[in-house]
Amino acid sequence: MDALYRMLPEVPGVIMEFGVLHGRHLATLTALRSIYEPYNSLRRVIGFDTFTGFPDIDEADEVSTSAVPGRFAVPDGEVEHLRQVLAAHEANEPYGHTQRSFVVQGDVRETVPQYLAEHPHTVIALAYFDLDLYRPTRELLDVITPHLTRGSILAFDELTHPKWPGETRALSEAFGLDHAPLRQLPGREPPVIYMTWGA
Image (tube, rainbow, N blue to C red; front, side, top):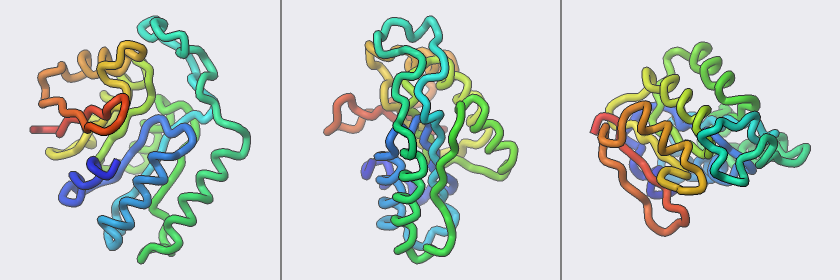
């Protein structure tokens, strides 16, 4: 996450994570904001997840035995705990009096379009996809495209992963795999694969 965040200080906009689970990346991104951009009052970090697991499975994802409805649900109280963790991070920042990290619960196919409709001025600096599945990834790529700027980063947790082919199919259909160079960040298994919009 550090390597991704270091690409962002010159790119305006918010950070969105699609597929939060327990919030490890969301909390890390919030902490990195306090390190690299403590005085950027406009850098919001927003996480979207059902927190009840996969709502449904497309046939494109049935190759994985883990792709079942309800998979990756979190325990009761976890969402509120995550909100408390993010608030604790923010409390010690220069803009600690202003909430800049948010958790949005619900199906991303509904909550992300709703968020963008309510905040039409949104520019997305980093879109981090950890949805694992084809259908929500594919739909969100279409939804967020008008909110990307040259230099925005799109990062994927399962791109090229044979167990989770949906992300690759979604990206290929949305933009083609030759839209921009794909790069991977080493040091993690599976590696995070990213592209720079407009590169």
